[in-house]
Image 1 (tube, helix red, strand yellow):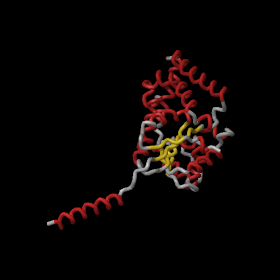
Image 2: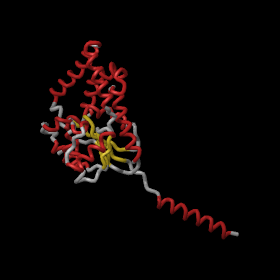
Image 3: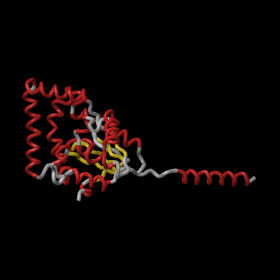
Image 4: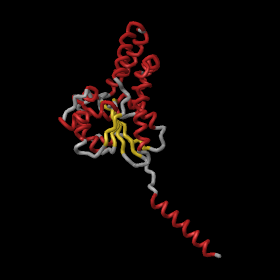
Length: 253
């Protein structure tokens, strides 16, 4: 009478051990948000293209989430692989990609994921509206410009605003948020997809999808967007419990 009970117990123990052995522990992904300065990388001494390249090598990411629209990425990558250069207009304007990131794919083992919510139609519509509002909404335009000029002046007085050790601080992020508050408050809704909150949400939707696709894998994600986007992403990333958000400053030598 006891034999079936013993056999059942052994089977349960064996099944538990097999399940434990076959399961993979969940590991939080590491995320680093690296603010880009675009064409200023060409002239900046503390944040040159050479320094950026070395920083990415030191981070050694598994995935790089970029300010490249998904519908522009394949053409850019094909151009790079076949000719070694990139002429695709949206990607070609970013030296951090054409001179640094794409060439690094030959040295490092990472995947580039395009995450920009930008479209040409959206950008054209935004530019047309902002130009028209200079005369149609002059007081609001003046408030927007004054806020950005005031913050840029503060940054210039405090440090080299292109110094990565300055860019990657909470203080810098707070200043940027102040600079863009009138622009976001006054124009976001009327700009539609091109509004500040709206375009950042579109960017972040792609970022979030990439993180969700690899949750629990213990991978390193590097996010490379313009530095003024950084605070917006960090605010959203801080809501996640499945990642560890790392400070980029230790990677700058």
